[in-house]
Amino acid sequence: MAYSTEDDNFVENNIDDWLDLIMQEYGERLTKLAFNYLKDWGLAQDVVQDVFITCYNQYHKVSKIVYFKPWIFRITINRSKDLLKSTFIKRYIFNNNLLKQFSHKELSPEMKLMLNNEKEKLSQTFLSLPIKYREVIILFYYEDMSISEIAELLALNENTVKTRLNRGRKLVKNSLERSELYGRTVE
Image (cartoon, rainbow, N blue to C red):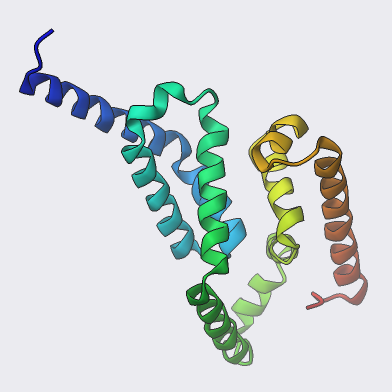
């Protein structure tokens, strides 16, 4: 079969359509996944954009990927962890937390009410978990992955996944109980 420029257009259209499809299918979920690692929506969106660029560059290998969802989740997790390890993110988080300390002293009544909201408590409790518990909970509850799928994705033993899931649940429960006991969130 002869090669022509029309073949190029066909392949490029397929790549674009495929990329649009996976962006619609996984965009929000991957952003939430990255956010749970990075605790910053803008950084999470940057990571996901990088993941989609990787997908675009790896289009020629897509047919060889047996399970696409774990593959794209693994890339997102790895990119998020890489960013957490970088010195840039450490400076960014430090400066962000420093700004929050100053802004919390001058909260309006509306802001105080918002901070006491149950969803806020749960979110803060969840985000304060160590990453090894947070990632398992994200994948299990928010991505509806099974224990075996999580174990395969994170390259862990299934019993390790179960243990982390149970410990994560207990940490969340204990933290929420303490905050309700004292009538305020415990930092």
